[in-house]
Length: 259
Length: 242
Image (cartoon, rainbow over all chains, first blue to last red; front, top):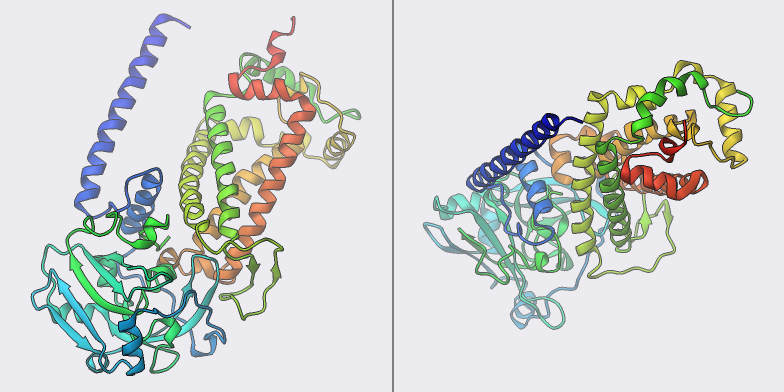
């Protein structure tokens, strides 16, 4: 081993390290600019959450559709996690068959609005037979009927600064817990992202999120928030909870659940 | 040949190379990164499994549907699969990137061709049979023999690197609703989302079994020496008097 070889090795290693560090910096700046950094990019799992999200946003064509199935493939079972909200307002609306229920749409929109269930049902609807995949490991195929989120976003007029859509359900659990889950604009505009009011029929079974739930077959089930009452378009999710983009994320789950 | 699968001609040829080092830096570094990430994958995999311990075939499955088999494990509905999933994906990324570096460098440096591809003379039923019988009788390899890989090691390592690991990665990706949106074939070749999950589980079990046999063989061949070779790169054979 001659000295010059060692020195050459040292210089090469140094150059490679410097090139690596600077390209990492450039990559981080570019990634942030093109929306490849998820809200939960910090912490021990931050690097892998970011890699998964960025890799999928870069590699998967934006309008790839989740697989759709035939009517004959609809499952005869439909497992569900959790009970309907015990929240007083929800219970009152449920007792009135959701005639009084309204979905508020606000935030970075030109025309903040609220819609009744009847109004949502009068919008153009989409029906899709897709696999509902739970993070726990089970899955079932069902037909989901609803108004595409993109239609509502067009009705209210999304402002250019918008980066996320936050879905708020009625407080759920025991004791009641406020909940929220956010998605990026790519998923918000995705043709299969529905505000679903029907499952295997014109209505949503109560435990499956009546009167209206989010339905995104491209992500795991927990992103498809049930029992919706409000949708907010926003530039940042930093000011809600711990700022990680969702209540699930605070329990250690991925913000981006396309997985 | 009757005693072992060791090939004298090969050893002479290889001894010049292997004399100075048994494992290259790259093999050693990727080996230990892989060991750590695989351990994390197994632990986090079990944590994920505890949220739903039933397995199905086809596209769907859940409570209320017939299962293929149920594992007699305690269910943990909350607070396990969250960090379990996060750790699984973190270690999966490390495992895949590390494996990619290992595979590419192994091809470029011809490590696979020179050290793992069975030499023509060894690909015969008699040499395989003698290697199997050596293993069954738990015969310790000599120091010279442990400078190279025997036919069974070569076939096992090649199969794990180029068949089993790609399969466990593909069945993992086949469970992703977003990835299968872009590549539906990925899930249909495995027979559906639940089939992919079941196959993923079986391959993971196979890999754990492989690991146990690997550790048993390392112990048989001399735990300290073999582990030292994988850490320092040098085999004890190097210090033997010439």
